[in-house]
Length: 216
Image (cartoon, rainbow, N blue to C red; front, top):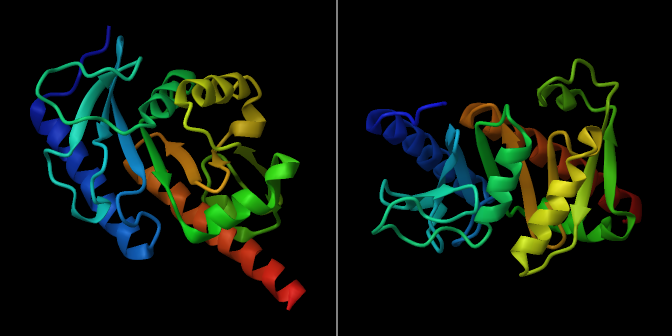
């Protein structure tokens, strides 16, 4: 049985997410009260620390986080309400044993591309050198498929759909988009997950700008 980290370690993880929120806010990827972030505290049983609902990600405090179980329910009393999309974090954590952090952002390019390619169910990214920034990708000669799920307020149904898609590891290896919504990606820790956001956002902007140039 694994043991949840001590309070000091939890605070260190919280501070990493707070720093991440500040960075993403500055980059325009987590504006307003959009986005949500989590880290895995324990796996037996599964326990996550998730950003609370309705918080400005550019100004997160140590009190703006909630400890939840695999069902997304709070494990201690007197906590703020967790993000409405908490179940997506728990599904990703449960289906990917190596995951240590999950990050969700709402950038302009991810929102646009998630709509443009929604009818195709996703889109491929290949040939770009920056693909090597994704974990386990050794070369630019790699085809990364970015699945797109329809947006819905029925988070349990969406979570079940994402869980089923994880059966095909290659189609859901690094992240996915929700239509007209944003990006979900993950990593072994906060640093890797943050790098994946940066890589995806760079690649999304390349694709979006290239499409704009073709139509101008």
